[in-house]
Image 1 (cartoon, rainbow, N blue to C red):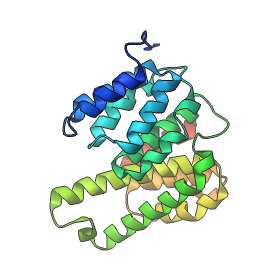
Image 2: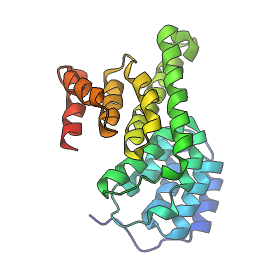
Image 3: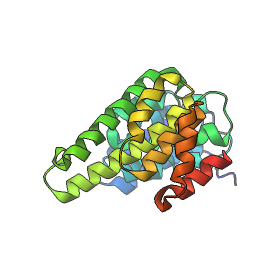
Length: 231
């Protein structure tokens, strides 16, 4: 359904509202971002990208609330939000959500070119970095911290980002990603392995297709393998 509403307020006013909300009010800040996304005119989307870069919500939940309309609205102009929004992936807690949206839009609208194509070098470097981080974690979980809640949160965030970046790498269509995807496929996380092998298959690597089929036997990866077969 088309969720777009009549314009409630100019983007400049919504920006002032957002800036006036205390940083710890994640839900309220997310709703202000969501207003911009729902209106989704040029000024709204440019302001949304600007706020994510310079004044990001403190928690991932704020981003998810803010971006949720863009997964449902059918006709918003991608070029008013991407690639500018990729500047906000410097904030790791936002990176997976932003990249997920760019991946979704690419497949949903059957785009010939991923919105991050002009920044593919940066995105693939980020993939290499997060894979190395996860390799270090597998060798020594304490590299993510001393307290269990901190370790769990960092691991969850890192896996989400690695999964989004693997899928992104396949959509970018750049063969230079193959080495990094091979490294990602060697990590122990089954969902991440499925994404890495799926991206390799999309890039034409035969071993990616073979390993993806083999992963279908694993309950943790089976659904994702089926989804890739449909794609």
